[in-house]
Length: 462
Image (cartoon, rainbow, N blue to C red; front, top):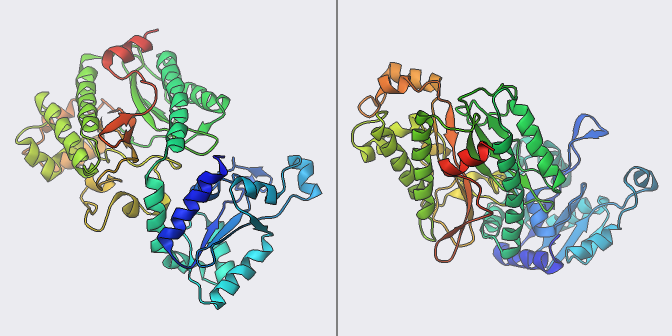
């Protein structure tokens, strides 16, 4: 945990934002894999972690804004529990670590909420992404599960997003600690990948690095020679001479902060000339996008810049044609770049996505473009000092999409389909870094992970 004053300050700022009512935070429960005693690794709710820091199951907390009162609800272990878990500090002791003076047993929560409702207090809670917590809301507040999300507090969402978007020093240190582990994961994968190996051998070794470093994976690793499948979690392919493998992976620290890094690796140690062409285009787009990051710049415009650089490069090698700005405006580039340039990063790898992407990445005046490709951009709003964002352009040759568009003659004034056909077996290529928006510009976080063609080939050939 951070120092208690960190959580006290966070809750104080939240009370100032919400102004009145009672704020309810539900922690997460253990989640069984296939029977009750065989459980997934526990992961606490990120907003509960942010405001209270307590990383164990079966907790709830309230912040009574009007009465300036905070209570954490939970039950101390019984002797039957201790047999399996060993002795643990009392809840009252743990609450002190979060700067909370008052604790109570879980059975007191419903009574407290009922009294608040009777006194006319508004109950604020965030969107719920776990079914068991939806059912808790039903039991605590008498709200039918099918309409629980209708009663989510928009004012609380907005207040939490404002706070969690701006990363403080201690949070940046945690993200960089996760990036230290990413450095080891990525460089090991570059050295280890060889023709004849299974993808799972590399993916498993990377997970071992995360665990042995006191971390866990921030998300299921994407390590695949089928890089055109954007979220490919299959590791059963045999890597062959001439293949490239996308490595999109991240670590999560013991305090819950994530890293998210992508590199593309030549399995045989050297890129082919065709692979170098596409790699150079993607790297140029990423570098130009990172250079553009500073406070006040709308990220959707950084995304557009990256798209134009990608499209210009693809035109130079004959895959696109015509006026590039017009092509991007028309969406022709989305045949090759179907996703967004990046997203917020923090306690969640897609930070705060569970609160609603449009609250996190957009505003009342900067709204999501609903068109194909553009609608996958999770972040469009103006950047602020303290944001941490990913920058991850890519080029992907998806045969099914190519064939569909070619049959429809879609954007044929901008796409050279005869040339594109020759790249159907290329796969995909992505390069990603994590970037802090500073007061005057930006800083790429973490140790420098090999990224240029020469750097990647040098370490991959060892």
